[in-house]
Image (cartoon, rainbow, N blue to C red; front, side):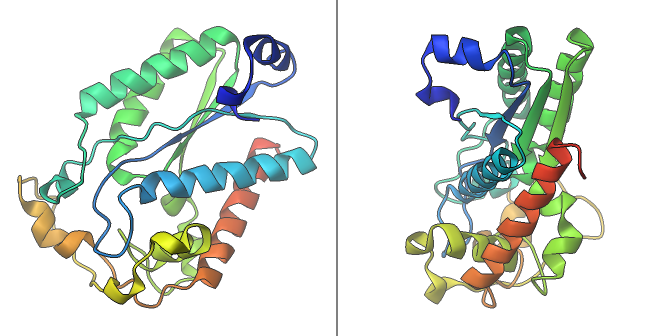
Length: 238
């Protein structure tokens, strides 16, 4: 059930027996020359939809919140179309959203994150809300990290705009993927370097992996295993 599609009386009634809300969070940023800027939102939205469907089949109801589209993406801000939100602003914004859900009576808030740069601001926001509402449990799920072993059993590599993300997008929004432009390589640094233009070095053309082996079949397999595992965790069967 999507919150934005409910009337307030419907929302009030659902709160009586639904204690979990899922909040997808992503970013608008460069994902190579082949993926859309909204990749980091499209993925958690689809995962959340599938999680809700699986939970419904298990007799568990959750509410799906509208997504937070913009995120903290300092490194990729060197590329056009990347909309970077300062970490303090993101932390404060998501904190206030979670405070409202907590005040509404939800006892579990699942942050379904699709973007790596959001991780630290989200942890800090969750800690502040947990301090204020000790009865509330907040989950931070970074789908590509928390289920890395499963993903690497499907893909031979993963990375920003890489084989895994490109496969997922081929499965859910193939009309937005330009596979003729899907190229890249893995880059790394021995230490974390923070510099305004470091994105051009570590993410040439906005990519850090080779996406050329991506397929819709791999994407469907990733979406299936990730959504199934998240659903079972929420249902208490994980």
